[in-house]
Each structure stands twice: as structure tokens, then as C-alpha cells.
Length: 145
Image 1 (tube, rainbow, N blue to C red):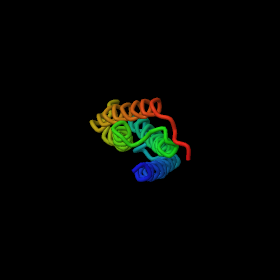
Image 2 (image 1 turned 45 degrees about the vertical axis):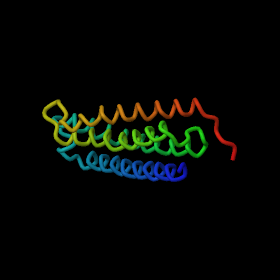
Image 3 (image 1 turned 135 degrees about the vertical axis):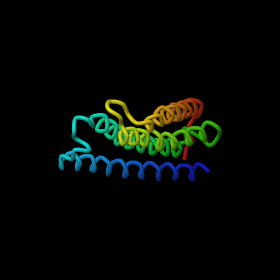
Image 4 (image 1 turned 90 degrees about the horizontal axis):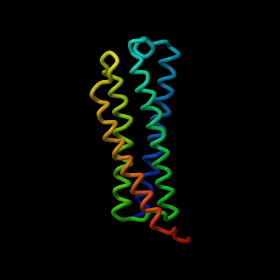
């Protein structure tokens, strides 16, 4: 079971990193091409939120890889805490970057669009996930392989 879950998080991690590194390149292209939809002062909120989506998505990908390594090393073992950590991390990996993207896509003046409401939900999922990992890691000793 641990191997399967480990593989899931390795795949999630690398796909999130790939997606959000490419998104970062797209943001650089928008900047290089001086596109109004990105650089106009009225779209400062969009620029900020899309940059946050790129950054959070990439970092969440790295957290998936860290979780997979934690499973591999035996600091987190299958069980309730491991399952909650896994689902929380996947939910955060979807909701936080998506909330930033949607919030920036439909902003109104200086306020983000309603999509940004996904961000705190993802943040809570991330907080639950890392707390479960920290608790599980504190309770276990890695297995000697």
C-alpha cells in the first residue's frame, strides 16, 4: 500500500511541477510580449494572483515529492493520519493554485474574482495534511531496509 501511495505522490509532484513551471514560462511570455491583459496597471491583481498560482503550484509539487520520500523512508506509515495527509495534499495541490488562477482571471477592479475562495479551502487542507505528517512522523521510527 505504501508503494502505491508513494507512486501517486511522485506522479502528482512531478506533474504539478511540470504544469506550474510551464505556467511560469507562459507568464514570462506575457510579460515579454507586453500584453495588456497581463501588464496593464488595471490588471495588477491578475499579475499578482497568477504569480501566486505559479509559485504555490510548484511548491505544492515539491511537497508531494517530500511526502513520497517520507513514505519511502518509513516516517509515515499507512493509516488514518497517512490517508488524511495524502488527501489533504492532493486537495491543496488542486484548490490553491486553481483559486489563484480563477481569482485573477475574473478580477473586478482591485478585488479578485470569487474563484479566490478556493485558496483558503486549499490552505486548510494543506494545514491538515502537514499536521498529520508531522504527527505521524513524530510517532514513528523509520524501518530499517
